[in-house]
Amino acid sequence: MGGGIGGSVRSRGGLAVLFEAFFGGLWFAWSATAISDRYQWVAALAIAPFFVVTAWGGTRAWGPARDGTPIADPVFRRRSFALVGAEFVVALAAAWFTGGSSDQAVAWTTVVLGLHFLPLGWYLGQRRLRWAGAAVVVVGVTALVITLVSEAVSYPVAGGGTGLVLLAAGVVTLRRTGGGPPVSAGPVTS
Image (spheres, rainbow, N blue to C red):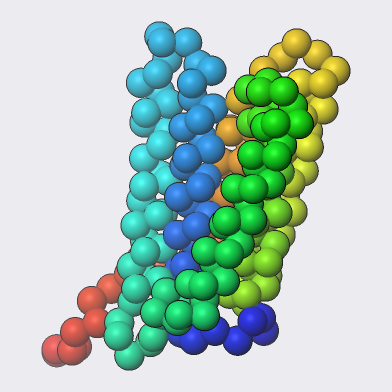
């Protein structure tokens, strides 16, 4: 199962989707900075699915009160803050190690993001989140190799690849943890 936190499978899956889609959209938007000004409108439209899936995951994460939610679990919050704090330390160390090279920093930060999803997936009991994390690590390492062996920028690879991997993972998690879009929890009338 996982780390044994509270909440239904649906709410834990919703929280996983919230993380996947939010960070996927953030990384995708980050990659859009490498696109010429002429095509920025395309990038802006491409962000829309990330907002939809993030909102959809949020409605699952904070679902009906009877389901409970991992977010209300103080142990989950404490562990999450500790994990994010460790990530920032690693990301800052990577930035220092790369000498401030923005392309290498983007790639290293992508690797750190992928590593973040490994323990989080275990803790939420969401195996797909761990697979998504591993895929993001591969994307980050690929972007790092590209920046080390060529003059190419890593933004499109790291940002675009991570965004698409996490969006796909979020959609799959939504489908596997409760089906279609959120519905009202009110009474059914005939």
